Image (cartoon, rainbow, N blue to C red; front, side):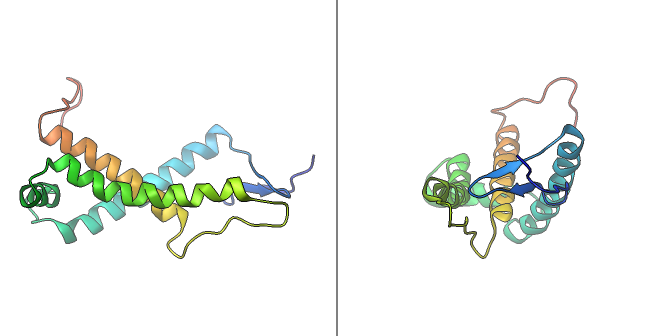
Length: 141
């Protein structure tokens, strides 16, 4: 079956009802590096809008105090907003017919995935900060 010309910058080749991905390890590594660079810019850029410039995780801690919750629970509320949006996007795949297309919102699935991954990273950082997760001996900050 011919899927046409697939270049790494497109990531996908279109068939009638299925997205066929041709991902080799070299392209995967490049894309993950690009994604991580973009996510770091988002994380550090947006993060400063929500914190006190001393504690990068203060937003979750302050709201936890306000609401009588654990900071990780507060973080999960923010994270699940993005997970729910990704789930809504993925539900479309069960409804695709030969003549239909997958619809993406104005925000875009990549942006929603970036935010969800960043919240998972923030969760890891919060758990380290609270002493719940320990860095391995070889990992120094």
